[in-house]
Length: 310
Length: 310
Image 1 (tube, rainbow over the protein chains, first blue to last red):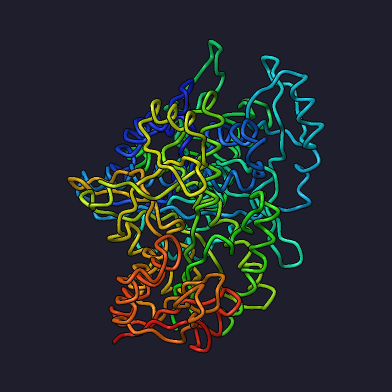
Image 2: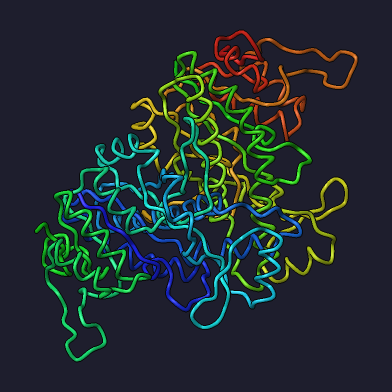
């Protein structure tokens, strides 16, 4: 069975932590164990991951060191975060596989994802990236850089960028070649480095592709049987926070679309995950939203919330 | 013909520049053209590259932003530089190949290189990395971090780390799978992320592997016919800076070893290049040191200084 699994931020470093490498290595050691169990069960695994907090720190470093080092644009920072996280994830998972005497090796491919330059998302930047600032600082940076800022819940100002839909992987063929050869591949970290194609040339753009949408496209690109969106909750809930709250074992695509349209899932968290799952289920696969610790069970259909055709 | 080419720092961004992404993209556009000509001539290309100035800037960013963002260790910074440079190199070369209507695609593999934890290099750190400091600042950082500093020609103090020999690639099998599948692969940037293997586990170390030595190992690992060390000079010279200065068309391994032992080539620049070429020539291939602009001619044996068995 071929599985694409998407890791959220907390699988990479603990929420509310400092973002030190020690914290990341510790979080990744336990993530590596959960994923190694999945690979040991005979699954051919392709892994993708978020990068919000990590690329946020890289963007903050660009800003704080800008008097001495020219800041890199977002596409390059995204590629740096793929190197950083891909290396740490591959090493942790590889060590966990060695501990289980599983022979598969792990590697990380720097991945560019083509987006449509006419995607309407470019006309309304909405995805917050990087650190929060007070209003005068945000205004100064906006003035110097042309970046767009928006006020966030809590009152801080953060840069916002477009979040276009992923269209295809530049590294489509090598990705498939690596998976077919039996390797565990870490790809399209942070949703992939967004590029537009214009007159046959690729060019990076300052945007962020939702990592769950990219995961669904990745699952299609490598012909996965199952898409696992791994998160902190064991199942999707409806009526979250109300007396009628109910955890779901299964959700059909049409139910998922109806609940999405009714605003049942928040756009910043569960919404894109359910949307990504519905997209993949519609293309004929099974998609599961599950807790990271349940990854192996979720691949067998014994944990999480499955989104299925219908 | 299969060729491993190693790019020096100036192929990636101009010496004495600010290191901005605009400078890098401009340098890489012309590098991409030279390499695309090589691929268009029918060569199967594996590319590796230095990262000195780029990882130096990433290390400086760690230092300058350290009050807000926990600095990443050298192995992680090296992986970040592989993401940064691998992305920019792959995109530039890919665009140059598209312009020539060549079908091969380019991708970057994050690459770990195993070194021996008992390599004597670890007992005498000598490779300068990162920015230069005045003495009090170097002493303060040394006190806080345990880093070792050494005075440099010119009087500044820089951190020095070990430069162990590369032993093998962690991503050996996928590397070969990708090359065999006809892809242009960018691998082992900056000499590779150095890791040691201890009781079956990999762990990153704070060291720098010489990129030319890694290039020679890479050429052996992928079964290359030819190793190209691309630099700014069109040929190796003996008696450099003297009235007897002479450019060489060819050098046997035994001549190369003799000249190296006689201190003919400076250890910081031409020395490791000649050594890497001698290693590869000894293993049965042909190694050429040539100017980047002569890459295609050098692959045909019509430019540069060839190091051959004998």
